[in-house]
Image 1 (tube, rainbow, N blue to C red):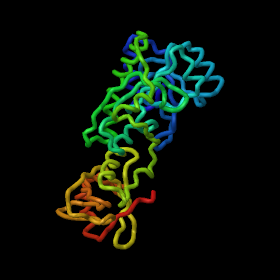
Image 2 (cartoon, rainbow, N blue to C red):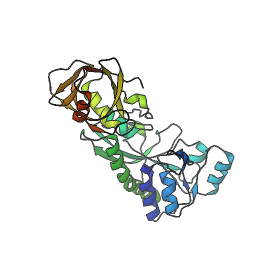
Image 3 (cartoon, rainbow, N blue to C red):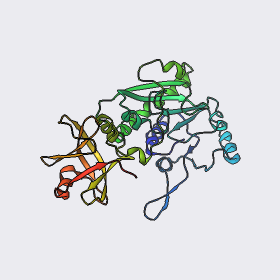
Image 4 (tube, helix red, strand yellow):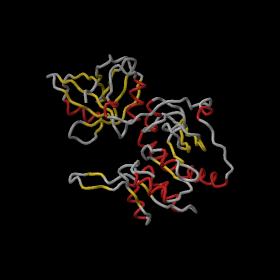
Length: 315
C-alpha cells in the first residue's frame, strides 16, 4: 500500500526480492494539469510497468474492499506513505501490517516527519519500521536506521535521501519477520533513548510557511530549508506606495551582522538582509509572483532602490 514517489523504490525492491506481491493498493487517480485529466499515482504507474495487479479503493471501510482484502489471504501487509487504515484491514494478514516511517519513532509521528525534523532543529532523524496499531504511528518498532543532520538539508534533499534508504530497511525487516528471530520494541521504551522524544509532525499547510519578524533567525532559516520545495516559505514586502508584494524565499543563510530591526530590510553590496527578533538572514534565492526563481541580487535590481519593509504574509 502506497501512493507517492517515496514508496516507489520500496515497491521495486519488493518486486525484485523473493517475496511475492499479491496486490498493489494505491489512491484513486486524481485530476491534474491544465486539462484536469485523471493522473495515476507514482505507485500505480510503477506497478503497471512491473505488471502487478493494482487496486484503487475509494473507501477502505467498504464491505466490498474489506471482502476483497481478506480474500487475498496475505501473510503480511506492507505500507509506505499511505493513509490511515481501519483495523479490519491492518489486522487481517496472518502477520499483521508493517509500516515504513521517515523518523526515529516515537519522534515526529504524523504526515510530515521529514520536514518537521528539520524545522525543529533535530540533530538526528532516521527511518523506522513498525507494526500498525490503533493510534497512528504508535505501534511497536521492529527496526530503525539513524541519520545525522548537518544543518544544510532541505525538505526535498532529505526526502530523496530517505526514499532511497527505505527499501534496504524494509527488506531487512521482512527477512527478520520471516525468520521469526525478532524482538519488537514498544515506543515507550524507545522514548528513553536520545533523539526519540515523542513529538508530532502534522500535515503540511501553506500557512505554516509564513515567515514572521517575531521568529528567531535560526528558526526562520530552519523553516526555509524544511519547507523547500513544499509548501514553501513566504513573506510580504510593503512597498513605499503601501502596495504589498508576496515573496517566496527558497534559500537563505544566517549572517553575523549588526542587528537589523525585526521587519526591516538591509541592503548592502547588492545583497538583501532580513531582520528577525534576534538576528539577520541573508536571502540567497527568492521568487516574486509570476516570475521564475532568481538570486536576491537580481530581485533587488528590479526594486530600483525603492524603500521597503517586510511583514508576515497573510496567505
